[in-house]
Amino acid sequence: MQQEKTYTIPEYAADQNVNKATVYRWIKTKRVETVKDGSKTLIVIREHVPDVDLSQVVALLREQIQAKDQQIKALLEQNAQLQDSTQQQNAIIMQMARNTETEQKLLEHRRKPFYRRWFDRRQDDTDAALDATTAFDQPPYDEAETD
Image (tube, rainbow, N blue to C red; front, side, top):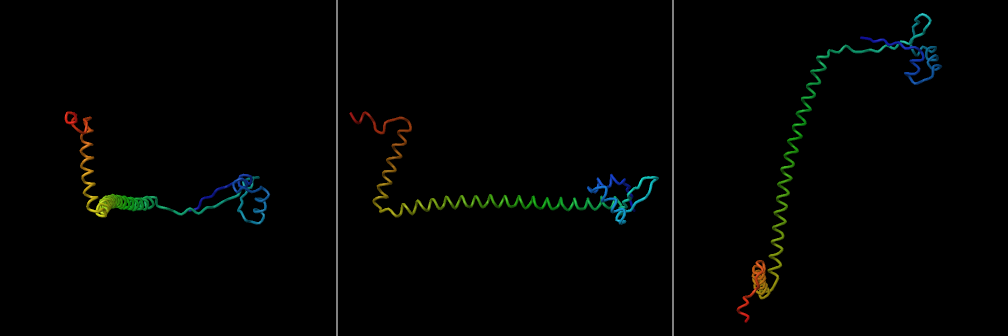
Protein backbone atom coordinates (compact mmCIF):
# COMPACT_ATOMS: atom_id res chain seq x y z
CA MET A 1 0.00 0.00 0.00
CA GLN A 2 1.31 3.46 -0.87
CA GLN A 3 0.57 6.74 0.78
CA GLU A 4 0.93 10.05 -1.01
CA LYS A 5 1.70 13.33 0.63
CA THR A 6 1.77 16.61 -1.23
CA TYR A 7 3.65 19.71 -0.20
CA THR A 8 3.92 23.19 -1.60
CA ILE A 9 7.44 24.33 -2.35
CA PRO A 10 7.74 26.51 0.79
CA GLU A 11 6.31 23.69 2.97
CA TYR A 12 8.74 21.14 1.53
CA ALA A 13 11.68 23.53 1.95
CA ALA A 14 10.76 24.06 5.60
CA ASP A 15 10.21 20.31 6.12
CA GLN A 16 13.61 19.46 4.63
CA ASN A 17 15.27 22.45 6.32
CA VAL A 18 16.64 23.81 3.02
CA ASN A 19 16.20 26.98 0.99
CA LYS A 20 13.41 27.28 -1.63
CA ALA A 21 16.10 27.69 -4.30
CA THR A 22 17.42 24.24 -3.39
CA VAL A 23 13.94 22.78 -3.82
CA TYR A 24 13.64 24.41 -7.28
CA ARG A 25 17.02 22.87 -8.19
CA TRP A 26 15.80 19.44 -7.06
CA ILE A 27 12.68 19.88 -9.21
CA LYS A 28 14.80 20.82 -12.22
CA THR A 29 17.10 17.80 -11.77
CA LYS A 30 14.06 15.51 -11.17
CA ARG A 31 15.25 14.63 -7.70
CA VAL A 32 11.68 15.19 -6.44
CA GLU A 33 8.43 14.38 -8.20
CA THR A 34 6.00 17.20 -8.85
CA VAL A 35 2.41 17.63 -10.07
CA LYS A 36 0.57 20.73 -11.20
CA ASP A 37 -2.60 21.73 -9.39
CA GLY A 38 -3.86 24.63 -11.40
CA SER A 39 -1.18 27.26 -11.10
CA LYS A 40 0.47 25.61 -8.07
CA THR A 41 3.35 23.19 -8.25
CA LEU A 42 3.07 20.47 -5.62
CA ILE A 43 5.76 18.08 -4.60
CA VAL A 44 4.54 14.50 -4.23
CA ILE A 45 6.13 12.13 -1.75
CA ARG A 46 5.10 8.51 -2.04
CA GLU A 47 5.74 6.25 0.89
CA HIS A 48 5.38 2.54 0.79
CA VAL A 49 3.50 1.35 3.83
CA PRO A 50 3.44 -2.41 4.17
CA ASP A 51 0.10 -4.07 4.75
CA VAL A 52 0.17 -5.28 8.30
CA ASP A 53 -2.35 -7.40 10.11
CA LEU A 54 -2.62 -5.68 13.46
CA SER A 55 -3.80 -8.83 15.20
CA GLN A 56 -0.50 -10.51 14.26
CA VAL A 57 1.46 -7.56 15.58
CA VAL A 58 -0.51 -7.59 18.83
CA ALA A 59 0.04 -11.35 19.21
CA LEU A 60 3.77 -10.95 18.59
CA LEU A 61 4.00 -8.13 21.12
CA ARG A 62 2.12 -10.20 23.72
CA GLU A 63 4.56 -13.08 23.23
CA GLN A 64 7.47 -10.70 23.70
CA ILE A 65 5.91 -9.28 26.86
CA GLN A 66 5.39 -12.78 28.26
CA ALA A 67 9.01 -13.66 27.50
CA LYS A 68 10.20 -10.50 29.24
CA ASP A 69 7.96 -11.24 32.23
CA GLN A 70 9.52 -14.70 32.53
CA GLN A 71 12.99 -13.17 32.35
CA ILE A 72 12.07 -10.69 35.09
CA LYS A 73 10.69 -13.50 37.26
CA ALA A 74 13.87 -15.55 36.80
CA LEU A 75 16.05 -12.54 37.64
CA LEU A 76 14.02 -11.82 40.78
CA GLU A 77 14.46 -15.45 41.90
CA GLN A 78 18.20 -15.23 41.27
CA ASN A 79 18.33 -12.00 43.24
CA ALA A 80 16.53 -13.62 46.18
CA GLN A 81 18.93 -16.59 46.10
CA LEU A 82 21.92 -14.26 46.03
CA GLN A 83 20.59 -12.31 48.99
CA ASP A 84 20.07 -15.53 50.94
CA SER A 85 23.58 -16.76 50.18
CA THR A 86 24.99 -13.34 51.10
CA GLN A 87 23.25 -13.48 54.47
CA GLN A 88 24.60 -17.00 55.05
CA GLN A 89 28.10 -15.88 54.12
CA ASN A 90 27.86 -12.90 56.46
CA ALA A 91 26.74 -15.17 59.30
CA ILE A 92 29.67 -17.50 58.64
CA ILE A 93 32.10 -14.59 58.56
CA MET A 94 30.76 -13.25 61.86
CA GLN A 95 31.09 -16.69 63.47
CA MET A 96 34.63 -17.01 62.16
CA ALA A 97 35.48 -13.58 63.56
CA ARG A 98 34.13 -14.57 66.98
CA ASN A 99 36.08 -17.86 66.86
CA THR A 100 39.25 -16.03 65.88
CA GLU A 101 38.79 -13.57 68.73
CA THR A 102 38.30 -16.42 71.20
CA GLU A 103 41.34 -18.27 69.90
CA GLN A 104 43.39 -15.08 70.14
CA LYS A 105 42.43 -14.69 73.80
CA LEU A 106 43.30 -18.33 74.49
CA LEU A 107 46.68 -17.94 72.83
CA GLU A 108 47.42 -14.83 74.86
CA HIS A 109 46.38 -16.64 78.02
CA ARG A 110 48.59 -19.67 77.22
CA ARG A 111 51.64 -17.50 76.55
CA LYS A 112 51.65 -16.27 80.15
CA PRO A 113 53.56 -18.26 82.74
CA PHE A 114 51.38 -20.31 85.07
CA TYR A 115 51.96 -17.99 88.06
CA ARG A 116 50.74 -14.99 85.99
CA ARG A 117 47.66 -16.88 84.90
CA TRP A 118 46.99 -17.86 88.51
CA PHE A 119 47.57 -14.29 89.74
CA ASP A 120 45.40 -12.85 86.93
CA ARG A 121 42.63 -15.28 87.80
CA ARG A 122 42.77 -14.23 91.46
CA GLN A 123 42.89 -10.58 90.38
CA ASP A 124 39.91 -11.13 88.06
CA ASP A 125 38.00 -12.77 90.92
CA THR A 126 38.79 -9.83 93.17
CA ASP A 127 37.79 -7.33 90.49
CA ALA A 128 34.54 -9.18 89.91
CA ALA A 129 33.80 -9.17 93.63
CA LEU A 130 34.52 -5.46 93.81
CA ASP A 131 32.33 -4.78 90.81
CA ALA A 132 29.48 -6.76 92.36
CA THR A 133 29.62 -4.90 95.65
CA THR A 134 30.00 -1.43 94.15
CA ALA A 135 27.10 -2.11 91.84
CA PHE A 136 24.80 -1.83 94.87
CA ASP A 137 26.65 1.16 96.32
CA GLN A 138 27.96 -0.92 99.20
CA PRO A 139 31.48 -0.64 100.47
CA PRO A 140 33.77 -3.52 99.43
CA TYR A 141 34.24 -4.52 103.07
CA ASP A 142 32.11 -4.57 106.16
CA GLU A 143 32.54 -1.36 108.20
CA ALA A 144 32.01 -3.22 111.48
CA GLU A 145 35.10 -5.34 110.85
CA THR A 146 37.39 -2.32 110.49
CA ASP A 147 36.54 -0.87 113.92
